Length: 513
Image (cartoon, rainbow, N blue to C red; front, top):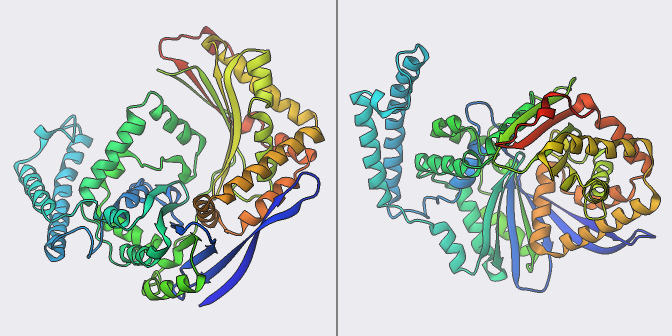
């Protein structure tokens, strides 16, 4: 094992960039590859605890999209010790469910083939199922009811709550899956035991039922919203080759058909300790935390094989792509450009460029909302993902008939940035605002914990120390350079959202330049 002490510097000040606060971070690495980032802070007797798996939807493949998000749900289903009154019977039922589900898939394959050759119109219609298929479904449902009598619902959550824990949650994104909770300082050992137990002895009970929960989540957040499916289509249009093209929640057919075998194979690769980092920020003694890590986390076995490298990268776009949609929504234009991944040297100028455009003192508001009165709202910003990135301009039009005019207004402001240098005063104002925001984010224990998780998942947690300095180094020439490099017509993807009952004659007559 190795320990190293590192310092994070938060820089404040507009004239001289002097270190105003130093946060001591101890990094502790176990022999199985798991890393701990320890930030002791005396004061309120509580600790912000979290851990991140360096896995998200970008690590999936066609056929199992949504599996990373599904595991976020499954991680709260308990272990051998938590979530059931009879683990032996529970595991026996899970094995039987897997067996029957395999037979059901064979029946579903027959229906899919019949649909392929045109023998039936709908492979999911109950009336097309064979008697054998119906018997298997009945047997499967009966087993689920038997298992439900053994389950102790939400026991994982209740244990934390009864111990004074709060704010327990998790999230899945394109590049990471994170789990976090706040616990009293005297419950740190409980956290180590709970988290090590669900990593060492997970029981993915209710797997098939939880797939339905995720499908319902998708229906509520995407399928049933006015623009949900259109937004997905825009993403798929923007990313031609990259796995960023599919939604984090996954495609419905994939979520419905992911097998436990496929899910466990994914788990064994991406939830191994060598792909995880844990973060503690709060009132604790580092030596105590290291001892608890040795006691509870060192038992986890290193993954048999490391996570595979990312292979499929986005190809260079050679021509503009456009999408025109009609929905129950306000008239809106989205213009998105391919840029760079997180921590790329061009990301700081792009971040500053976004700040120049945004806010009530930003260029978009002054020009498009106040002066030309084309928009009720307009903005832009960069999103640096782990392996790629984008910059998006967005405008909500006052009048749907002037949506193309608004689109052109967005581009006009970008042309100004290409041709005229930003003034030193405007740039310094943005830098000062960024420094103040950085300071506020690092004041919160939970905020610092979350940031460390995110920086770690995207590359190196140490980048949190470099971020402010890199923003402060941005020059007017840098902003002009990235504006000219990325905001070109051939690198542009545009989505125009018109109200459902609106028929724009101008949309067929031309487009923004």
